[in-house]
Image (cartoon, rainbow, N blue to C red):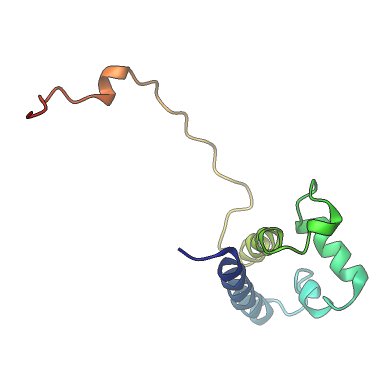
Length: 111
């Protein structure tokens, strides 16, 4: 099993790949500005505001779990901009009610 740090690294790698594809397609896309200006506190604050979890205290925003989640949200935005994901999520599928009998097999247990 991988740790959250490896997951965060994997997300960052996928972000880089998606950003390169978006840059090739549309070099001036507004999402690319976040990567160009991450050293700027204002740009980073805007990035956190747009992609970060709203209920996370500021002192926890830099931990691996929240960073992976935030860059995951950014990756989704990049892939939407590339046309690889729909702009709206699909409608949820309503599950059919099940009876308890469906959960059991009537085959006798051999002991």
